[in-house]
Amino acid sequence: MTVTVPPTPVLILGARSDIALAAAHRFAQAGHPLHLVARHPERLETDRTDLQLRHDVPVTLHNLDLLDTAAHGPFLDSLPTLPGVTICAVGLMGEQAENEADPTRAAEILRSNFEAPALLLGAIANRYEAAGKGTIVGISSVAGERGRATNYIYGSAKAGFTAFLSGLRNRLAKKGVHVVTVLPGFVATRMTAGMDLPAKLTAQPAELGEAIFRAVDRRRNVIYVRPIWQLVMAIIRNIPEPVFKRLKL
Ligand SMILES: NC(=O)c1ccc[n+]([C@@H]2O[C@H](COP(=O)([O-])OP(=O)(O)OC[C@H]3O[C@@H](n4cnc5c(N)ncnc54)[C@H](OP(=O)(O)O)[C@@H]3O)[C@@H](O)[C@H]2O)c1
Image (cartoon, rainbow, N blue to C red; front, side, top):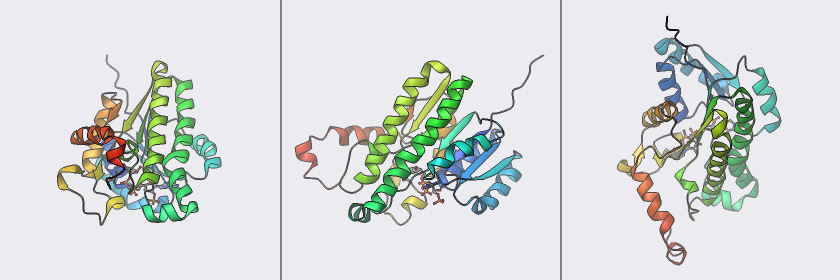
């Protein structure tokens, strides 16, 4: 007799993001129960109803501001069980000019993209390590691959986050825990609303949802979503510094 193991619950941090919601739909479609985590979870009530009706899976909403790092441990303790997959979509880009001029805003960008997600994923990773299983997906960015004048505060925080995910993967590879790094280029979401983005380089949230689902299923390490971004970033990384500093990218 074969026993079917039910799909593991998925914990989604920053669940109000368009990318997070696309991933939520893709995992729910495959039967995974969801725990959606956001700063104002009541804003997700309609999405919760939609996910439950479309996919017939249980969906719970949880309140957490990731910048409140003292709340991370109690939040994890409050979950009924440890979800098998954790996806972190938390991020904040802001405006580069404001980020340069206002150190309080710059600190918020650095903490929202690096410190807060890294500390919470680190706490989850320790629990996964003790359990000998679990998958973590961190949504970082190609912006972390080289500091550029137009968004280096956001980009440097993403660089830290990418390095953190790489180290976590390296540390836990032999412990049954897998870490996926997602490095999207442009994605048409609330974060990029109003920007004039080139269509060929711009993914839709549903592409991210599918790519994240496949990356978890196939235990991929690092994904760029649209392959062209791997080439674009290889070129950008390799521009010599004397040339790079004359460009305004
Ligand atoms: N869009 C792109 O082109 C692009 C490209 C590369 C990487 N990314 C990354 O993809 C991820 C998702 O971004 P998105 O494009 O979907 O934009 P988004 O809608 O702005 O999503 C970011 C999410 O992070 C949440 N968040 C921010 N600070 C938080 C905090 N302290 N505690 C809890 N939640 C917090 C926001 O919550 P609220 O809903 O409460 O504001 C929002 O739901 C981000 O990490 C972003 O950096 C996006």
